[in-house]
Length: 292
Image (cartoon, rainbow, N blue to C red; front, side, top):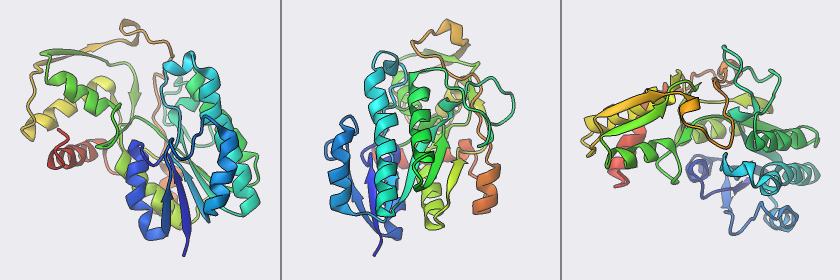
């Protein structure tokens, strides 16, 4: 029986991966409490005790703005720990799957980023995630790096959909950035894609997001429209588009972070669902589970 080590199993993608990976083998799920990526030196004993055939790393430091003032911690979790995981995977002959981000790009393109495009992260979060990618690429391990973007899900707390619904229950007007463009992506779809790629033991760098593009403003408008259609109670009456300059943050964000699906479509022979359809499904699941 195949043994799969899943790290970051308490995150919004990690919790979906618990389900999607189950048909592929026995999933040993670890969280930050049992496998602490802020202490990379402790990883070796944990991994070797489990002796996995496959390692799926869904653990990450994702506080984009906080990373600007916690560079060392972000580097430990996003850079050093994945590099060490890759070295252990190489030594054990395990297959490593690692989740990365659109933030490895600077957002200056106007066409979808290919997996082969030059990276140029704008801030500490993107820089540390890229450091993890490089460590994995140079390890000699058999690996899959999956970059994704604009992730949200029923599980977890700090995602855009949940934030908008929380604000929408209390406010009549919400201001949302309209000049950053990307592809909202449901965590469950990411987990499904990872399971499909893992089943084929796909190697290299791949991009996965839901299909279609939107601004954060477009996304917010869609969230409220779909939520209201489901009868989720909201007070919001107006969504006002603003610029990035109107909403300054410690970290710079890519203005355009649409990722190309070309390589993924050729491998899996399927196109990712459109973001609006996945949003609708996510809200239905969340409502049924009593989350909203």
